[in-house]
Length: 316
Ligand code: UDP
Ligand code: MG
Image (tube, rainbow, N blue to C red; front, top):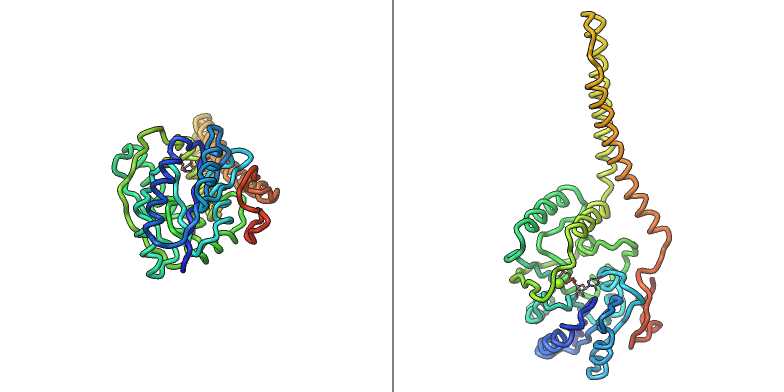
């Protein structure tokens, strides 16, 4: 019989983790399949780890991993996927924004042969500005990047064993999961669910983090921004050359004296700005190369009820 794994990244979720565990266990039991829940404590400082240990003491299907500090959700998901042993793995947030009652439906679709069953939330109740920026961003990234991303699709999804193995083969340090999920391919199906807003606390996604995350997505999957820099540079050089020819022609043929400082300032500031942007673009890529070449692990484990050596897919 197929085994199901649930991977749950948790950062300071002590308030909801018990309720989450209860609800999710009910749904999992209702599927009638053997299952395990892999909780990953991403360096919480609010007692989330203690809560996990308690859950593990009471429930043999609980596995937990705890990081030495906060490494971010991407790393937590990676760790969970490495240690999950199921034939299918569902990734879920601990804050109950991903409705546990969808587990049954995901499993059904998996059994119909899909490797990725992707839950897509609608944006009901989201701030209008966020929806607007999200739409614009997805439009841009889908025009530019080499992978296609869908608005409203996050990490909440079921993955088949081979999809998980595929993801684990992608060894990059900078993990932009949305892109990685799309990169691996396989049979995928999308289904929509009602947006659940977090009543208890504000989202950790500040505007700045969203912008940084957005840049990650744009830069992780192609080198077109670098190429754009070249095109813009060429275009500007052409414009500057044409302008110079025109100024000289006017001065020589008509003997007109050109007041030069306006164009000078415009050219200096305009070109200066563009050069900064292009340097920034190049810098972003070099920064990425820098991180990749260091080959640092994505996380360090502090505590777990699993034997790290047991797991064949454990390598950083
Ligand atoms: N999370 C994590 N590490 C972090 C931030 C978040 O493991 O550094 C977990 C968090 O506990 C939750 C999930 O990732 O289970 C989504 O986080 P959050 O609810 O803050 O994000 P949002 O719902 O706003 O996308
Ligand atoms: Mg959330």
